Image (cartoon, rainbow, N blue to C red; front, side):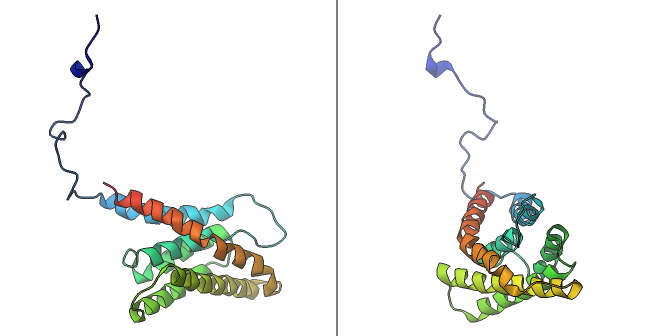
Length: 184
């Protein structure tokens, strides 16, 4: 005996068959957890066992932090650089508090730029991120030099260059996460 296709009915939740997808409330947990989790997971990338003679691995936590901040200006409060920087310090091995201070200063610089700029485009965001990545990495080098003898700053040039070149990829990942975060 053959069952007609029109007789097969998939189970649905009651009342959801004809419900509109417009004007629905989004989950606050999802709205807040995705940016926070992505920044923490990006900071944890530095714990992977990757061996090199010098610093080469980009600070993915910083890249994700700048991506979220430059892409969604009102998402994070101005003080958010401190806890995310301290979290990054736990995983990166830098002197504790150095990234907390440097990320907070980076957040203040972005806030000042936002308050004075009329508009920004993608290339300006990339330039802002490049300058801040360079400043934060050199500042981290300086803080590490306070704890013990640090090598010359030229050793950071490959890491700075790779970080600047990988910034568009991190922005792309961040945009995907943001579209998933905003989807209902």
